[in-house]
Image 1 (cartoon, rainbow, N blue to C red):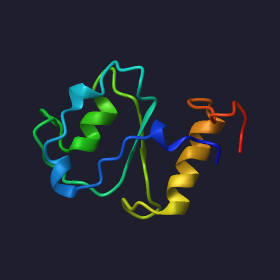
Image 2 (image 1 turned 180 degrees about the vertical axis):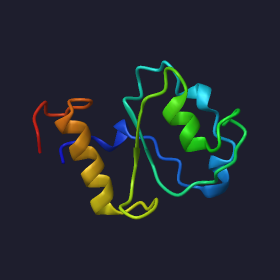
Image 3 (image 1 turned 90 degrees about the horizontal axis):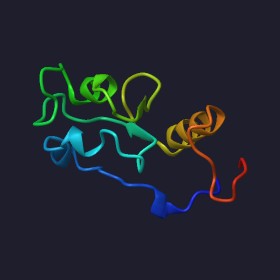
Length: 101
C-alpha cells in the first residue's frame, strides 16, 4: 500500500497487552492511530475504564482507535488493509510516496 514497515509498531502478544501503559501513547505525535484486535479487557493501564480499549478510546490525548474485525475483534490482512484505507480516506495518514495506493 506504499508504507514503509518501520512506520508501524506492533504489540501482538496477549500477555504483553496486560501491561500496556496508555500514557505512552498520549499526546505523542509519533502515533496517529491505534489499530486494536483481541486483547485482555483488564490491564494495568486502563484506570477506571471497563477495558484497555475503552480507556484508549476515551483518555484525552490518545490517538484515534480503530477496532479491527467485523463481528468481534480479529486481526486479518484484509482488516488491516481496510483500517489503513480508512486512515488514508480520512487523511489521518499518507503513504510514504505522498499519494494513495
